[in-house]
Length: 281
Image (cartoon, rainbow, N blue to C red; front, side):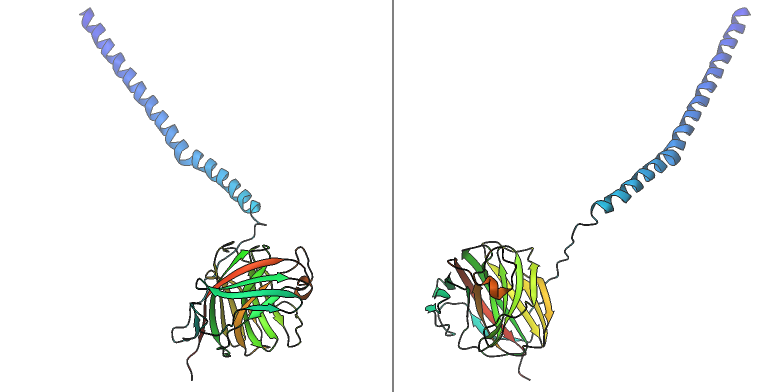
């Protein structure tokens, strides 16, 4: 009888121990769940909010650039000029040119229009095809490359040409895009578009330049990205061509003064000179 009593007592103690262990397990589980759902998320949220207040401050002064895609040619416009420089079909009349300021040699070779320019006192040259016509609205595309010469030597499209008057959309391999204007008396006027950055420039490689004009609104693109827009009603008509320049390095003067350099030498290549114009009314 004594052994049975002891056995029952042992059995009762085991049950109490099990109940105690279950109680401890439940309390522990409750504490862990409470931490998981209330304490830890609050700590993480506070930490994240602190990071969120720091991160924007670190980029407040970082410049942003939103690339805008260049407009496409209107679907109903036609090609007024389409020159791939297989030959001189549009009468560029390549050859030599000298005016006391520059020595220029141009040629059509390897399906390219090539320009070799050397400055004596100044450094701008422009040429145009003699099959040219004027148009108020146009879309012009040109592929161009600096082969050699100073990084800041410019190349691009001349337009609104009437006599000695012209506008010059130039880029250079330092990454700048500019629009310069010259009047009938060969005077360079205040720059219309100054030092816009070309962030997608192909340095020492071919770049596509585009001008899309409707009345007095001009859009300028490099490699399918808009680099500038202007409104100007002073130049309603004119012909189209190609331009290059050699400018002084480190000179903050206007374009006319910057052209007063000496002894610089550069070579350029151009291809696919295409001018689209609207249909006739």
